[in-house]
Amino acid sequence: MMNDAPNDVATTADFEFQALNEAVFYRRAIVKEFALYLHGQVIEIGAGIGQLTALLAEEIGQSNILGVEPDPKFAGVFRKQLPNVRLVEGTVDELPPDAACHTIISVNVMEHIRDHVKELAKYHALLKRNKGHLCILIPARPEIYAPIDKDFGHFRRYTKCSIQEALTLAGFKTKKVFYFNFPGYFVWFLNFKLLKTRTFHPAMVRLYDRTVFRLAHAVERNIVRPPIGQSLIAIAQAQTD
Image 1 (tube, rainbow, N blue to C red):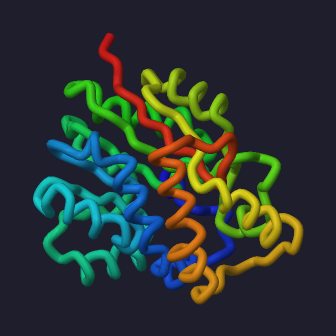
Image 2 (image 1 turned 90 degrees about the vertical axis):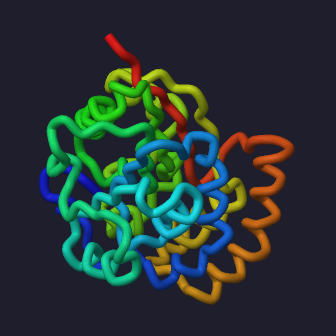
């Protein structure tokens, strides 16, 4: 949710935080996928109201994480919920020029940014000194781009090739890239692409999270990665000159 004027083209006010708060196992799964790279100083770009930040803080300690969130309303909620976690209200451009970290977390952010390669290059500058890692989760598969994507201010949905190309142009070496949430692809296609639903329903999110997603992610993580998914996860390492 970063860049020039964040979410200029979004027409929704809260990004369904209430409904997504029900996605308990979904958020925990993301942290599990990133766990190997959660060390040293961690910056979370697009921290929102702190839903994922709280889990990251449990994993590495509140003093080791810095949130970055441009929306004043979201930042206000974040501070109330996580008063001991540092937060920069703004974009990556508000960080000190000499700032450095070991890991950057970016979950559902890059799709909001018109020039995503330029944004990724800023992350590379923060990680370069430590040859740190970028851990991102992004919406996948252009064929399921739906009206709700436009409502959220999404410029795109990604493929493996498109995110790898952007990371390479920004100076990163991709270490892992894989689809995430296989059944979610079909749920998104049906509900949001075909039926053109424009909102999430908390009860349905809760049911999906605790049953379908929980089982599917166990298979994806421990047995086989899916050929497609609602999202993509990419892990990339900053390269030195």
